[in-house]
Image (cartoon, rainbow, N blue to C red; front, side):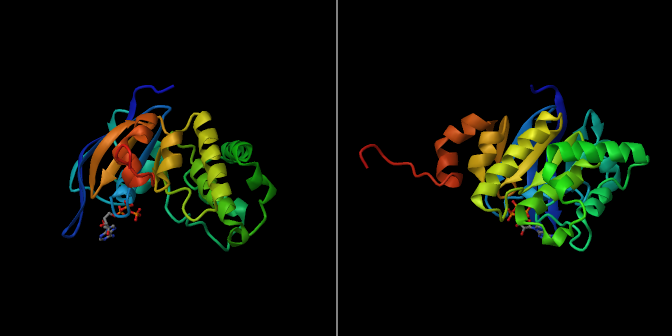
Length: 245
Ligand code: ATP
């Protein structure tokens, strides 16, 4: 199902003052794929997504999307077809589910299209339709994450950037959110996802990159990464044991 490179990042460097958060990062996302980025705290994963989304300025390197440089301003990035679902959800707690969803459509013009997009989102997340008039802060954690993803989908992205979608969710909800990400992908949306839950993220991904202190240190198919002893040791909570140990 993977096609040509949709997103191509080459030699990306990002600094926060004296801190080098990304050092020479290169990676690709092909059309139709789910690509996961795993790595420990502070590896630079959020910085990478925020840089693609136009929220952080790179010091060096290039980011191209469908063959063109990704615009610098974040609203233009959305217009180009890339939506970021940030870490920690950042929904508008005092607004209803419906109002939150409409915030995600703020760049869209016509009411008919917005209505069609709402229907599309309800089809993927029926729970959102049931909760339209509920104030967002009263949703459960899992529902808030669904709302955050749904809001991202309201800009009709070709590429969805997901920052830690399973963070803070109970195990049963983690399973559900990953199932829903797969469903979003089956709707034709390419996904680049950052996750601390490496096990689930690698199972879901066609391909994956491992980041460590600002660099990509390993890459391969999700399956290869799951089977890799170093990945198992560092990120999957499995211990390598010497024979007979
Ligand atoms: P986590 O999983 O903990 O969110 P991460 O892999 O997403 O980690 P980033 O949040 O991208 O990592 O951070 C990469 C490095 O940049 C860290 O050392 C972090 O402290 C630093 N950093 C991130 N944001 C800023 C900022 N606004 N100002 C200064 N340093 C920052």
